[in-house]
Length: 581
Image: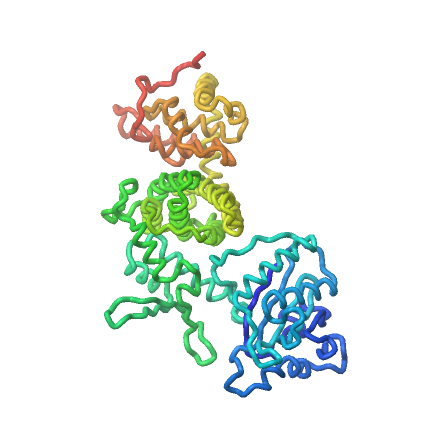
């Protein structure tokens, strides 16, 4: 059950909408289910003689009784309350109880208070009601509605339990402010798929992803086409900022501005500065972007993998501050990947980034923690630009997405262990979108690797099965029945041909963790092995490999075939041997 409180200035306009047909003729049988005094509240939905003006005048009476200078500018309190999808439909009597409990909990009209605000509850659909109140009591005072949104949420959790409804996750005041009903209505009228607040929030997050400095952050905002204004102190220091969408104006033709803190708690300038100071990229030894080289998209993605793996590992440990910092960095990395994703995966990755954004915020602070590695990875991906959905770019995208799935799962577990219900749910949603994006990105390279693995000589496949048995004795049999086993065998073969010891290489990949939450252990191992051994993220199809080898022989008949990747962990005899028994 979800309450959504907002305030406005036109009682008649709101009632006209609630009793009207709706924007898509979705309102059916609008009528009152409860009111401050039912006998005094005319119902234009069920009483043919009642009018909207009569109902408006009754609600507004305590406000209009005051001198004009004491009337609040926004005197209309509006709170839709909606059940979750799949919940049973409540009766009018049940909705009336819900309404009375919420106006009591929020301070609009407490039980037994005959001087409380006037209010009504209108029902025009099966799954929700609209509470409307005017914000002056009968005695002329204002209601005590401090933190009314939090109190409404708490009361809804109790109602859900008592009514046998889905119990939704409670908030912790770290969520971004939701668009108001007026913002949503304006977006619909203007043909937007989302409100300016939501568009600006995402644009600001994108500008911040991997930014090395405050100056770069503001430069990216301007490059994104946003209107940007900085609040400058007499000393010349920047105190804050606000952004607006071009063309988004109010009735007076002025831009509609949003400060960073109105977009999300962590997008205020002080919080952005904390993030930049704690995790400034450029001097992290794991990923070298210090000289500002622009890497190819595939290489930038490959270099992001160890930073993402480290983030997942830290989330399994008990250092809350360090974990919170890694979540922030992982959010930036996911934003960077989504911004530069190929068309085949972009939609899922954008949704994953939007979901994970909620998982980056909690009351755990990370002012002194270091997330330079993961922020540097985000920076490298942004600078590398858009990746193609095929070839080495596609394989490298699958490689980093395989790891980001583990990061999202680790984030969900970390939040769940600390009672952060909304963040845990958001991380789980992000993981689902990441899985879908991974499957799309990995389809072509994994299929080619499986084909290569299926055509290996059986003695070679048996030898790699022995290697797997040594490294993962408890899981070896199950892994050999996974669809990715052929791709794993192909990767071990390719690594051995490049001069690596497959036994040592696989043991190293296994020891890196984290495998127990992987949907496919073979997929995770394939990408780890390819990164450790510096193998290409793709394997050329058999015909293409044969054509390349033939062309190489014709051009340089005296030269041996070039190795597929530089050797790192060599073995004494790089040639395939028979099965070990």
